[in-house]
Image (cartoon, rainbow, N blue to C red; front, top):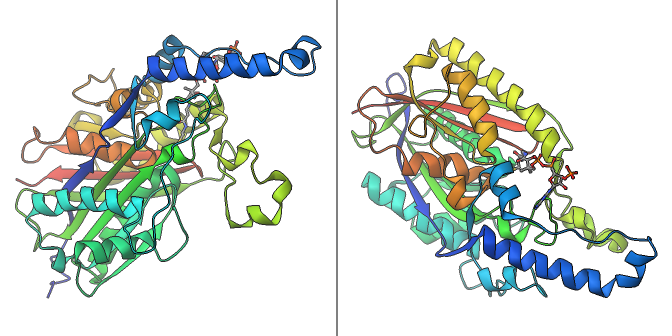
Length: 379
Ligand SMILES: CC(C)(COP(=O)(O)OP(=O)(O)OC[C@H]1O[C@@H](n2cnc3c(N)ncnc32)[C@H](O)[C@@H]1OP(=O)(O)O)[C@@H](O)C(=O)NCCC(=O)NCCS
């Protein structure tokens, strides 16, 4: 059994599932513009008498300049791009089949387990930590626990929007410190295409689908090649600037059940202006507490929502303009994948770091919510 005096939570391994289908900005914009053209033709009279505004076209140049996004992976490309549908079509599965979230979560989790050399039977807890749950219960985490063949432990779902994975890492680390578990999987299946309004020019380019997994373990059982968790910190501060009003009470007000606010909506400019200083201050404060200087940070794996936000935050943290090597970007290929973004960045851009290198995994998003996880390569 774990010796509570010496066991420390570490990141043992990560896993990633990337859906094979991808949509480029050009494909996305062509589909949106065809939709807008047809919509304008259908509403020509109302547009010409001034009672409604015509839809204006989207542009690849705007998307790349404003966000840094060039493409996104999705679970169902054809229906999203069909201007008469513009939603993913993911047929409902029977209760005897794996749910889609569990299916992709298991793929990412299996990669993390294989990389750590961990037998699933020795995993004590599974957290399904992500922005959107496809059903309230049974928890996807319990389904994933069962599908992986994890032993006698427990699992539960947790949603802290874009910060779900970092909140999950701290929760897992606390379980280990308290002696409740020695091996905890934090799984983030993000099928964001289901809550994105592909008919909204302001936001249709933002999200992509993916699944990630982080295996958090007690240092006494983790593989030697792990990452020590030096410190974690979580923060929330209420804001309406990123919101999704979808929920079980929607059926109680059928007159507004299909309104656009039942999908993702945001005041992007306000989010940008408010979150950059909030997160920069949070990181600085946490660094001071841990006695880590900007010059000691080898790499930042920041939340992947906007390349310009990350540039500003990284500059504040490091004290100079960050190179791609210091603050890698994955949102050009993946777009915003909510809680999974900083974990994808870590998964894809951490193998080259060496013993004692220090880095930061950082998330921020709806709530507002933010999480910081400072880590050091152990071997
Ligand atoms: C969403 C975001 C990329 C938008 O960029 P922005 O520079 O703030 O853009 P704005 O919404 O202010 O729009 C600027 C102009 O571009 C236009 N525009 C918006 N969408 C467009 C599109 N798809 N194509 C072309 N032009 C577009 C707007 O109409 C506006 O035009 P105007 O100046 O004539 O009024 C950016 O605000 C952002 O990423 N914010 C942070 C969001 C975030 O982190 N969210 C967390 C989500 S989990």
